[in-house]
Image (tube, rainbow, N blue to C red; front, side, top):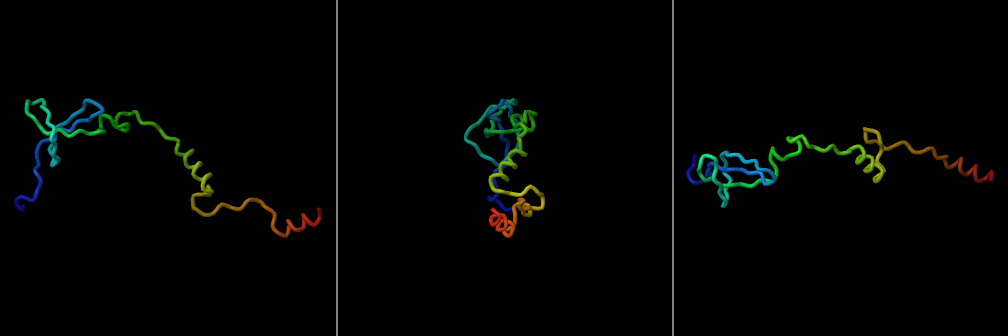
Length: 107
């Protein structure tokens, strides 16, 4: 290994700001804040917004989103077909030009 090109690798405490969950691990992250850990030593503190203690997937508080409604809204807005191949939707049952001309001539 080359000297003086690698970041310092040491112990760091990561703490979830939305819950009281914290864990000690090793990292190259740096922080000006410190925290006194359970072993009595002080370690750099990195605050996190989401961890496994607060993420909905891991806590079981995940909300199901009505994705079918969102897809239908998108298709309605942009006139997308319903088939899965992406081909254009079949035209509606409109009379052909000749039939329109005949119908208007009869009236």
